[in-house]
Image (cartoon, rainbow, N blue to C red):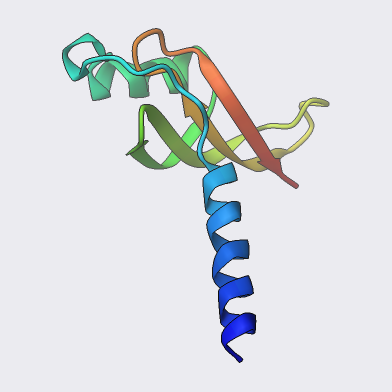
Length: 94
């Protein structure tokens, strides 16, 4: 039983570690303001934001965006560089 719990904890921990994006470390005063970043996400990238948060050194959203064929909206999880606003990683869920 103990081995099973240890294996389950290690599996979960490895999944969580892989989930975060690798954004560069920068002091918070260099980050784009939250409202400025949200406007960039909506106006420049075209995402609809359901949830906006900070994850480690990244800004992160959960929301919707057009798929590559641009024929339907899909759920997205996107990590952004908080200094430049560039996309660091994007996960799409059909």
